[in-house]
Each structure stands twice: as C-alpha cells, then as structure tokens.
Length: 110
Length: 236
Image (tube, rainbow over all chains, first blue to last red; front, side, top):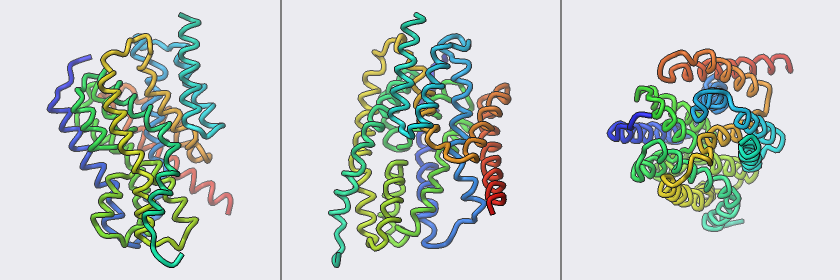
C-alpha cells in the first residue's frame, strides 16, 4: 500500500463534509412543504442497497489479506452475517455472528 | 398537552436512542482502527468523524483511498453512499420545515440513520407535536449518539496502531456493511437492486480506480426503481 498523501486526505474530508451537509440540508433548507418528484424519491430509496453490496462483493471474493484469493473463513463469515441480518433484522446480532464465524473458522482452519 | 414541552421530548429522544450506542460505539471504534491502519493520523480520523459524521461514507472513502482511486472518484462514490440522506431530508421537511434556519442546519449536520428512523416514526405516530418539540426530540436522539461517535473514533484511532494482523480486521468492514444491508432487503426491488450492484461491480472490476462501482451503483438504483414500478403495476 502506498503512503497516503495527507493534503489529499484533508481535501477529501472537506469536500465530503460540505457535500454531505448539502445533501442533508437540501430539502430541509430549501423547501418548506413542496414535494419532491416521485421518480427522484424512487431512485433515492435504493442508494444504500445499490452502493454498499457492490463495494463489499470484491472485498468478499478477493480479500487483499489473502493475496486476493478467495478465503473459506471470510466467505462463510460474510454469508452468516447476511443470513442473520436478513432474518433477525438486527444489525448487532449480524455483526457478532459474522465475527464469531470468522474467528471460529480462522482458528479451526488455522 | 396544552403547553409546548421540548425538554421532555428531548429526554424521550435520548432514552429511545440509547440502545443504538451498541451499534454506534463499535462502528466508530472500527473506523478509527481501519483508518489508522490505512495510514490516516488521529487528526484526520477525527476530521472525518466530526466534519463528515457518516460512517458508511467514511469507510467507503478510506477504502477507496487505499486503492489509490482518483480523488474525484473517491468523493463522488462516498457521497453517493450518503445520497439516502437526501431522502431523509425530504421526508423530515413536512415536520421540521418551519423551524428556524439555524435549527434546520443543526438537524442537517446531525442527520444520521438512527436519528432519522426514530424521529420519522415518532412524528408520524404523534401528529400533534409542536415544531419545537419535534426538534427537541430529534436533537435528543443525537445527544448520546454524536459524542460517543466522536469518542469511540478517537479511541479506535489511538488503539489502531497496536491491532495485530491475526485479528483479521480487514474483514470488519465487509461484515459491518453486510450487517447493515441485510435488514434493508425488505422488498423484492431492494433484493434486485442489491444483486445488480454485486453483479455489475464484479463484472466492472476491470474498470480503473473504482469507477466500476459508480456504474454498478447507478445501474442498481435504476433496477430497484424499475422493479418497484413493475411490482406496483402488477399489484394494482
């Protein structure tokens, strides 16, 4: 991993700070009761499930820690997390079961 | 209730938000650790947690910076993660839109998933709340969350350098994100959107500097919206 450039890091921080605030302030700041177009809302509804799975998928399949090779412990942990989160709707329970699976298998498969 | 009582609702909000500390504290500490491992110093970690105050976007930005993605792509993708907050902003506007501008700015800065979710439900259930009571409740929910978010980020950043590789912290981010996504897969449209995102991200992995993820996210949003429309028409 290359050394991060600290000027760039601060640039990213300030750009994200301003951008995030504008996104959050957008409708609260600009409008009182005007309605957003329905098609915009319909797309915005899917932003979390559209961005995060795509970000995670390569990390799951090709983890850098194992030189980019699929790793049974990490894959199993990911699937357990997903299943527990889906059925329990409990974020914390999902994280804990995923972590338990990961450490359990890393220990067993050593 | 005849008189407005924002303070009472502030305390109610605080009480309702307390269980979320169980999620916020480890998540923030994890950000501190992961960001430190990626090469950020304590001031930068705190810059993220205090100025940006959006966990998923912060993790995304750090992850992409370690992959040496161009700065513009890092910012665009991380902000895309935060786009859902435009939806929160829109849905809180009917309840808080007539509050003074500085209060609305404060609400905007402190807009996090948990505060939004609690407040949205509260405002919908208790229609007769005054605007200042609503602002009171909302600020009450973030009163415990924000300080613990900052504090745990700091502790994570300070501890970060001492975490051994055997702890496999590289996988903390995927697990945390999966845990957040799974409960959000409420409808077939959400599932279709998530699957599209995964497939496109993997197929587009050859694209330089994480631009594939932007394409995947855009495609997945469109698929989600179109499937929702299709399901509505079929149900009608």
